[in-house]
Image 1 (cartoon, rainbow, N blue to C red):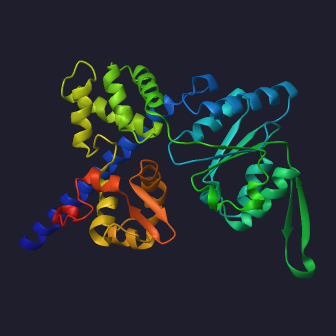
Image 2 (image 1 turned 60 degrees about the vertical axis):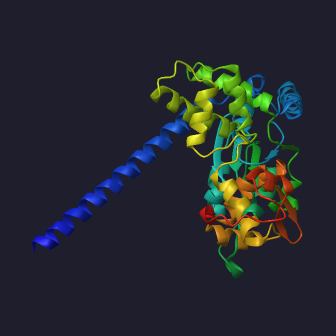
Image 3 (image 1 turned 60 degrees about the horizontal axis):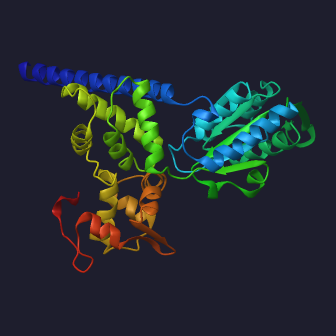
Length: 358
């Protein structure tokens, strides 16, 4: 009986520890999310980088305001974290319009979409993130809504079937996608404006970091901001996230301000190297080199080897590795480039057999 009681006590303590850790993690993520929102610019003039996009978008906004019309439907594409959601909210702010935000996977049925669309007023903006993940049956209802601002909804079946027409107010649909190739041609063709966001230059990221540091009331050196920008994978979201982690490190270690040393030590502790590659990036490259002799290797095989989701590799890891020249995508699969070997300190002639890969 005593042994059983001890085991129950241990299980209880273990359960309580897990629950406490879950709670702490959840709170941390919620705080980070709130901070992220506070760092977002609200006007087009405050948005840093993407100069060509910004200029064309400013013209479209001004023209729509002069004509006193709704903005045309807008499609924003590009890797995660480059500012698609921020731009959608900026457009709503500039047009003085209400924005309703949702995502493709969240709209599971046609009825969900109809409920959202019928509640929109003139000039409102509907923002659908990951629009390429809209179910096909729902997408069919989007076409007439975008073109004619009405929806035909069929109720009942067979001889009892009848069509109900819903008239909609004139709204603007802003779609965001990280996989533009997965958007069907009929849907893509109904967007009047299409913008692609590319990775940011380090100089632009340094400006974003300096602005964010000011909003967070953190003192940061120009050299430290520049180094942080170099390691941010060309992505503002990552730049702001790393800035918060460096801030934590600097405060705990009693730095008076964030300098080059604080950045280097903080990022090193998180496994981020001077080129901005993290542990997962290096793990992907090493797997291709170690397990598949440099490639080519299919994405499903690579994902199975790493025990990661294929979508995580395609959406999160690959874009930066491709842009940086560490990875090459061919018709037969992914290949590691000479730069990848050089970065990992491996010889392309003789592959390393490092047992610490996994």
